[in-house]
Length: 108
Image (tube, rainbow, N blue to C red; front, side, top):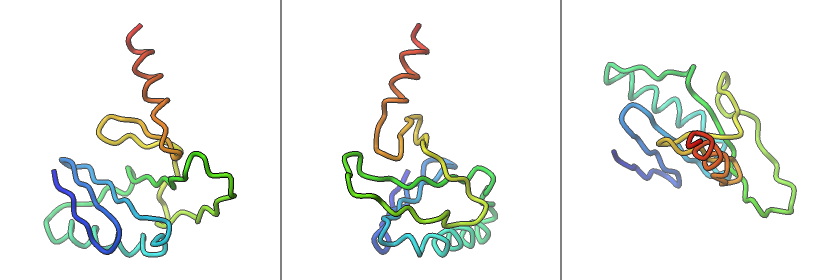
């Protein structure tokens, strides 16, 4: 497990999963960052599985100002409302209520 901070964004790697966290102010650089990751995987005899790739745009939950959400940064990537990172479901508004609901449902 490691975290690498590069030019105002973070990349977290866990086993064979990775999560790239890019602030909205750097959204235009997302496709270049993914291309860089793909280049590094190719150089290390690995393959980036684009079929499993997903993108979420996180917004502040109490934000009353309309938020301009950019289009999908990397063509072919699915835009989702929830991500599951390290087994925890997180909504794009930073809520874990879906995760708690799932846990409670499984306990019955």
